[in-house]
Image 1: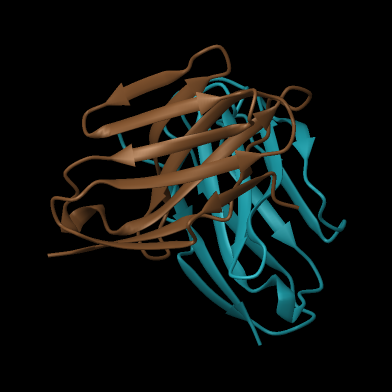
Image 2: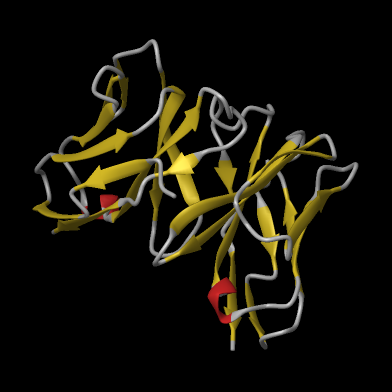
Amino acid sequence: KAGVTQTPRYLIKTRGQQVTLSCSPISGHRSVSWYQQTPGQGLQFLFEYFSETQRNKGNFPGRFSGRQFSNSRSEMNVSTLELGDSALYLCASSLHGLAGAYEQYFGPGTRLTVT
Amino acid sequence: SQQGEEDPQALSIQEGENATMNCSYKTSINNLQWYRQNSGRGLVHLILIRSNEREKHSGRLRVTLDTSKKSSSLLITASRAADTASYFCATDKETSGSRLTFGEGTQLTVNP
């Protein structure tokens, strides 16, 4: 089975712009979670989708949004980019909906740099 | 904010030695997982231990969980240079099972 894929792998954007990141989960996985990783804050949960529904959301401003499609692929969008949004964005998929109860399969991440 | 704290923050050992990393957390949990991350890449799942389990083994890995102390440890035996990576514990709180909260991680360096 192919692993979790994330596109693009690297991205450079300017402050004020918006960006869309994509995640394709492992075939058959219905749960997709997103995390932001920065040197200062570590790994922080953004949101989790299961069967196209957002089940949980982290403490991020409304500029961060996401969605999941019927084929379980997910996108996250960040509008009005700030320098502090520079981070590694990781997507994880799981067969079941409870992220804590089951192994999460992570993608390689998208490295976003905001200048 | 981080649910877990890990210590040490960095650990450097020689090949063949054992490495022990600790994780403490603040609130009651359902499960605790350990992940490995190689240099800015995605995370790889190592082991999951449920709140009613005390110890679990997987190959050279041994994980313990003490819910009364809200702490867990990861032991890697007979370490190899390829074990060099960052190791994170992740917990799911009882009230939020669909979200993982990660610790700050331990950077392990295994010298050949």
